[in-house]
Image (cartoon, rainbow, N blue to C red; front, side, top):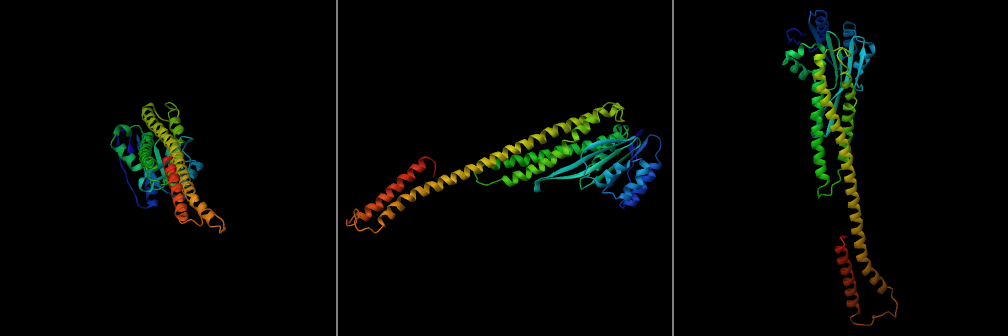
Length: 327
């Protein structure tokens, strides 16, 4: 529970979902003047949300979205209640993976409900920031929305830096002298970046839409600069993710080109050795035909001469191929 006038907050956590819902209902019904409540649920059941639906005036469609999660980032208004859906994420460098979750935020005139799916929870950090800034608390439920968005967008920026670091390592590996094919790693990272992009890109117009002007979305002019700051950070992250996606395309093309070069080098090397061995094979084949009348068959030095000619011809071919870079 938060007091807008004093900027004070009181948080009560319950281990059992039923107890948490009952406590949330009690706080919602006991709100005084200038107070608002923030209810946080994680992977709730239908019965959990049903207890809060009537008290908070949640629309059935909004409840359905919150119950199942996996929503595309969006903002919808149901009467006096604003519902915002977004993706939470973090980058796990050890696994080269972008881990995602879902978060629904319901903002009313005197209450906020956040429903989380997945292991990533920006709400504790958002609550800590609000407690450290009483002036923000005086802005009411929209201060909670701003804090949650701010923490989520900061996580986007951290994830983008992690992806950039991994991409830099991949670039160094691709252009190193070692002949290791990193195509699988590049594809894997590109798939994670696409998931990252699907979380960030749709949220940009959502946050921009919250800046429609004081009163248009139900907030006062005081919160607008804070929301604009979040929108700016999100826009920069969106550009960074797009850049990462394009760079991955370039790195993938470079890797495929290097693989093609390695294959061409191998084919030239094989062809060169085949040509070198073709000369002695041809000479030996001619003298192995067992004809009675053949040149030098009765000469004492015929065999050494033939072997010498084969060695000289093979050596000359080897030198020519080495000079041309085929060997």
